Length: 192
Image (cartoon, rainbow, N blue to C red; front, top):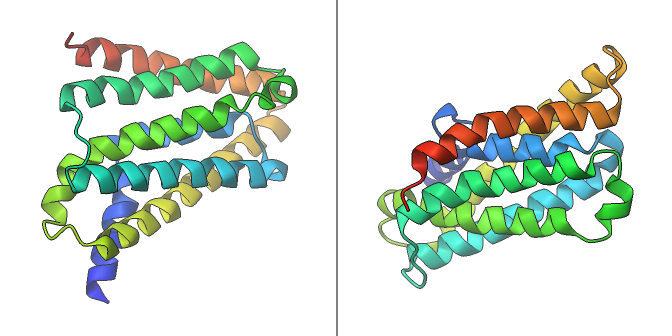
């Protein structure tokens, strides 16, 4: 049972860590266009992220796939930037664009890239390459994601009801802040 908590806590801390705030930024961007009534869509997006993250983490841990750490360090913020820019371009038109499924594709791609990025650390955490620690870790990731999503939705609710932000303005402000945070990260990590 202690192994479960060890890997579960690692998954929880992986998301809720200011050292690796990329997952939080991604969740903020993804959640910006939704509210509590759209919880099913958010659950699907989180599931897609988690599933693709687990697959790439599993494949990278078993050395089936390998990507340079330099590439991953650039792709992670780039994927979040794409999601934020997508929000900026579709703000107020979500229902029309939602049929294209772009958010689902971005969520899957971010999960794949993020899983590959964490594989470097997870190999040290789980040298035996057993499947159970990976599952326990991913449960921690899911729990942390749910915590972040609920917090983001509560903050969005407060801003949209108490401070009278309309949904379009909320999406624009949140996505712009994330873009502003990511541009310097991309410039600093660009190594090509």
